[in-house]
Length: 131
Length: 79
Length: 86
Image (cartoon, rainbow over all chains, first blue to last red; front, side, top):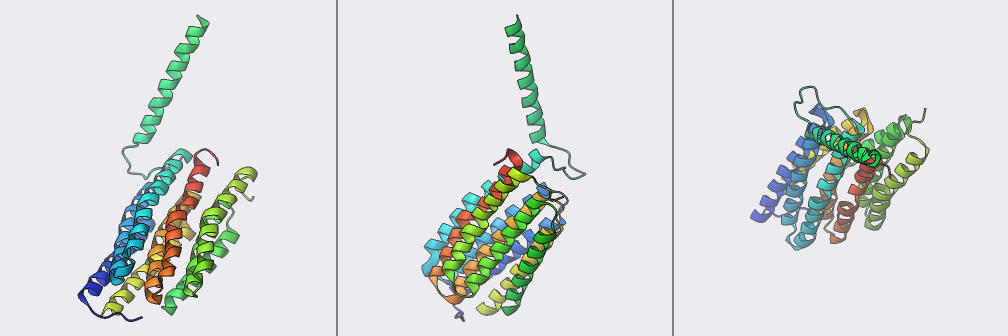
C-alpha cells in the first residue's frame, strides 16, 4: 500500500531506515567479532536498538497502532536481556574460550574466589567435627 | 518484495539441509528453530495470521524446549 | 518517497538476514548458532510489523506480540541446557 508524503510519514520512514541499518550492523558484528562474548555484545545491543527504532518508525507510519507497538517494544526490552544474559553465563560455564587478546575475566575470578572460600569453610568445619 | 520472500525461502532450505547434515543434535535443534521462525514469516506473508501465531508459539518456543529435554535424556552426539 | 525509503530499509534487513544465516551455518558450536538465532529473531520481529503495515491489518500485530513474548524461550532453554540441565 502506498503512503502519502506527509512529514510524520517521512520521519517514520527515516527512523525505520536507521533502525534497519542498525539491524544490518548487528548482523555484521556477529560474523566479524572474534569470540562468542564479543559476538553477543554486537548481536544484542545493536540489534535491540535497531529493533526499537524500526518498530517506532513503523508505529509513526500508523499512529493508531502505537499502543500495541509500544507493548511489543516493552516485551522486547524485558525478554532480550534475559535471554542474552542467560546465554552468556551458560557459555562461560560450558567453558567456551575468550578471544586471544582478552585481559580480564572477572566471572572466572569470582567463581574461583567462591570455590576457595567454600573449600576453606568446609575444611574448617570438618576439622571442628573431628576435634 | 518478491526477492525478499525468495531470500527467506533460501534461508529455510539452507537451515533445513544444515539441520539434517549436522552431527551435533543441539545445533540441529537451533536450526529447526530458525526454520520455524522463517516459516512463520511466510505464513503471515500468505495471509494466515492464526497459523503464523501458532507456528511462532509452538515452533519457536515449545518445540525447541522439548527437543532439548529429549537430547538431555539421550545424549548430544549422533556419532 | 516514503515507499522508496521503506524499500531501502527492506534491503538492509535482507542483508542482515543473509549475514545472520551465514553465521548460523558457519558457527562451530551450538552457542554461536544460538547467537545467530537471537539476531534472526530480533530482525524478523520488525519484518512482521512491517508486513502488518504493508497489509494494513492490525490483527497481524498479534503475531509479532506473541513472538516477542515467546521467542526468547528457545534461547533460555539452550542456556539452561548448558548451565545445569533442564
